Amino acid sequence: MEKRTTKSKGENNEKVMSFWEHLEELRGHIIRSLIAVVILAIVAFLNRHLVFDTIILAPSTSHFITYQLLCELGNFIHAPSLCIKGVNLKIININLSGQFLMHMYISAVVGVIVAFPYVLWEIWRFVTPAMYSKEKKYSRGGLFFSTFLFLTGVVFSYFFIVPIMVNFLGSYSVSADVVNQITLNSYISTMTSMLFAVGIVFELPILVYFLTRIGIVTPHFLKASRKYMVVILLTVAAIITPPDVFSQMLVFIPLEILYEVSILVSKRVYKKLQKRALE
Image (cartoon, rainbow, N blue to C red; front, side, top):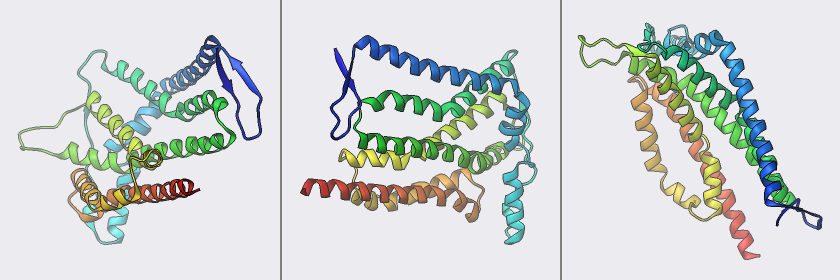
């Protein structure tokens, strides 16, 4: 027998659940999560033109909003290098079933991304009965911030990093005799990898929070590593952006702010741990 309890200070009520009851409850959370993903994937599948033409393939043309805003900003501050024109990638498909399979794949990816907050909520519902009331409060906040940071990273990547990367890689050439022909699979796999990668990178404050709590990371270590992190972030920004300082700063500054926020998070957690140790 195993206990699954709802705990709080002053509460002694406990509900005893067997292993199979635990398993049955977990199965319900998993099924509901899968149903949400499948429903949203079907919705995405039925809205093919919205998903592909309006969202996924939009950064491959000069009409994308990011290119237009950068061009207007470049004209305003007299920085013509910000005005990216002539972006018109020719996406090709070389497999007979390539477009259909990619349609299925992207529909599933959209289902997972859109259902991500709900899936996290289902996980939270499963684990919270074994938590104290104070732990529930903090876990609820962690659930919100982890979801918010991930989605913020995905949006930031889509509107800033992806179009700059598409323009750079799509126009890069080692020789005038070599013509770029971008396959549908290559374009979409590169985009989705970047979206997920940046979304995970934006979870850095949450990761630092837990690493500080278990004593692996300290604010002093993060401050000492700041100069190395600045060099790394500047290098990444320089690689994926056009050769001008302003474009590099558009990518570097949000990532640097994220690192500084992580230092503040670590500092706050570290102080609480020290205070608790002295009590």
